[in-house]
Image (cartoon, rainbow, N blue to C red; front, top):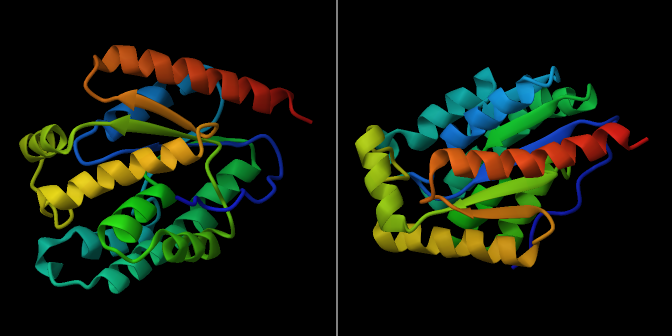
Length: 223
C-alpha cells in the first residue's frame, strides 16, 4: 500500500506528530497527555485535530460528522476532508512548524487513506495524490497508531459520546479501516509507532513520550 509523498522542506526544527487509529482508540487522550509532557520542557506545543483546527476546517467538520448528512457520497466526503486539511495546514500547521513548534495532531492524511481510500473504495493512490496536493506534500515526522479491535473501539466510542456519521458505519467498514491502518504502518515502519490501545493509558503515554522525546532532541540539534 502506498503512502503520501516525502514531506516538503521545513524552515527549521519543527516536529510534526500525528495520532491515528480507529474509533475509540484513545487518540485524543494520548494526544493531550503528550502535549502536557512536551509543554513541561518549555517548548511551544500545538494540539490540534482533523477535521478541524481552524475556523474554516471546523465548519467543514460539522458537515462531515453530522448524521443529518448521512447520504453524503464518498467523493464529496473525500473532497471535504481535503479542503479542511488544506486550510488546516496553510493556516495552522505549516506556520507552527516553520517557527519551530511541535505540532501534535489527532488524525491526518492516513485517516483519509484508510477511511476514504480503502473503506470507501476510492483508492489509496487517488486519495494520496489529493491529500498531497491539499497539503503541499506535508507528511508527519512520526505517526502513532493506536490499534484497537473495531468491536472494542466502537463500544468505547458509543459510551463516551453521541455516535457521529462515520462512527455509525458498519462493523465491516471499521474492520477495513483497521486493516488499512496496519497495512500503512507495515509499509512505512520508520515513520510509525504501533501500540495496542488496550494497554494501560499511563504505560502507553510513557512509551509515546520516550520516542517523541528522542525525535524532538534530534530536531533540536539538526542544523
